[in-house]
Length: 116
Image (spheres, rainbow, N blue to C red):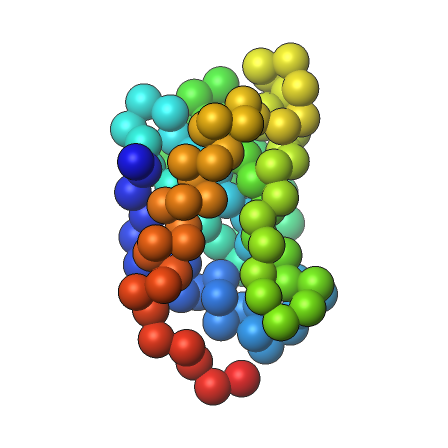
């Protein structure tokens, strides 16, 4: 199982509630198992996964990426990132992505719904 900082998850959740056209940028740092999340509109240069890796002082080669979107009432995680291309494809391995989704769902379930 991986780990995520609840305030980062909450920031993405709130940003998507306020503006469903925004997305959440997520990366998994493979050496530590840490998941970092930011709303796209809060990345200073709008540099996506690469910018977030740099903010965390992680190299892109150490990371895998995904997107959080809210096309309807619920958020969905999308296995897509240019970071994954260093491994040969734009998606991370399915088993890794399932673990990321499980970690986020478990963390998300423990959070109170905010009024939108």
